[in-house]
Amino acid sequence: GFHNSFLVDGGDNNNAFFAQARGRYRAPYQFSNEVVQEFRVSSNSYGAELGRSGGAVVNVVTKSGTNQFHGSLLEFVRNDIFDAKNYFDSPSNRIPPFHQNQFGGSVGGPILKNRTFFFVNYDGQRVHKSLTQTFSVPTVAMRNGDFSGLPLIYDPNSVSANGQRLPFPGNRIPYPLNPIATALLAAVPLPNLPGIAQNLLSTETQVVNTNQGSARLDHRFTDRDNVYLR
Image (cartoon, rainbow, N blue to C red; front, top):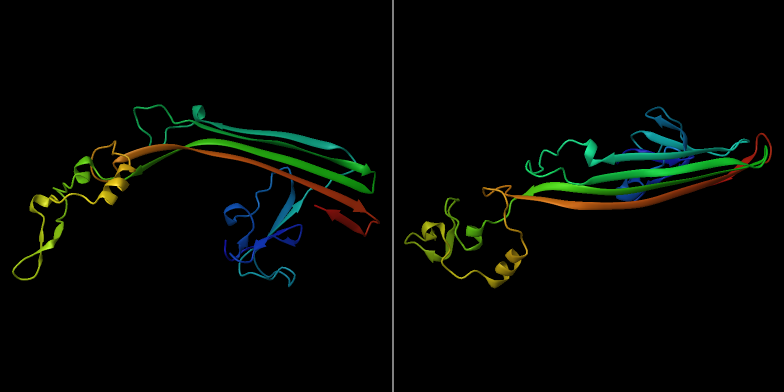
């Protein structure tokens, strides 16, 4: 949020322009679960080294290698065959396609035992998701200037005796439609549902392919002196 502060290994991870954490859509950087060693949320009474926001301070600590080799693999699957139908989906058609795969792995271990360690991680995501939405679009009658049954439309070219504009007879526009408006309407789909409101049901596919990797190198000079590169 706007009043929270996000840190990674104690380092600043905020977008100063938007006052939010860096990352896509100005959201916190989305770490793979395999990268996070621990995290701490400080909500009040924190020290001066953290005091830069009115909300919480979230500090994420990333994993480092150890004296033993460790690795992991992950696969997270979502599929339309496991899902119920969306409320807005057509009741007569099958569930729109939805496939989501999140996969990856990590490995860490020693380079020099007790001294130098590495940890690397990869996380990929493939999403093919159908988005079902409803819209309000002009009916065929409206495209021909027929607005009967709707609130009155007043003719800008006619004036009554008392200086008021007069409505179109039968709420139908008798003049030829503006060619620019006609060209724009040609790009708008025709309704596929009854009525004049929410009369277009549309299902489109959203494709998201992301790849994310991270690496960390730690070196211990003494029990009290350490350095790392992430």
